Image 1 (tube, one colour):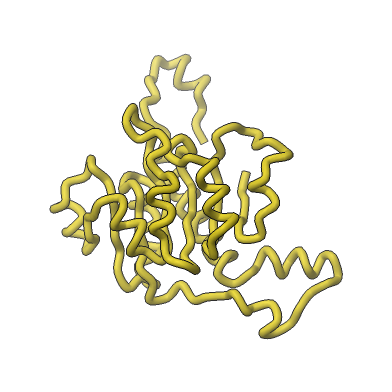
Image 2: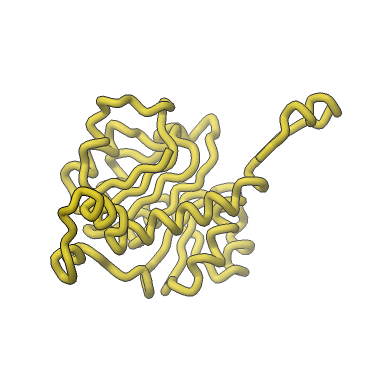
Amino acid sequence: NMDYNFCKKNKIHVLSTSPVFAQPVAEMSLGLLLSIARSIHIAHNDFINKKEKYGGEISQKNFLIKNKTFGFIGFGDLAKATLPLIKPFANKILAYDPWIPKTQMKSKNIYSLSLNRVMKNSDIIFVFATSTTTNKAMINHNNLNLMKDNSTILIMSRATVVNFRDLYKFLKNRNVFAGIDVYPKEPFPKNHPLRKLKNVIFSP
């Protein structure tokens, strides 16, 4: 979405591209969430492989996103673009972002909480935090294990804020869903064990 050659030629300094891709990431986040909630990706693959299941058989693990508590880890451009998309579904919206004043969040009817409290009290969590010198692997086994059973985490921005080794162990052993759009190394290793988990949906 960004013409870097034009910018360089015209001596335009690009400091941040998030305002450009915030809306596409917001819509992708909602798409992954809906696919998890309604087993869309699973049903599609079953159909392609001529093994589709009908009615209750495919929907046993499905859930509604309406009246859920949503949580944001990071409340910058990506979260602000996602907010109007989830408001019709949300019962309550929580957020952790040490850089955003609580008064600003309160004006949008968002509860500003600590990272641990967002992880513990949310049904659906969007990870939108940017990378800083202090937040590397801030999402790890300590706070992942605070998440509710049957909750969902969507990792959409800056893989460095997540300890992927802890994430794999957590998702392997807990009844929690995940949508992942960013990785510590891209292309993501073909033999990574995370690829084999049935409770994860991936996007490149």
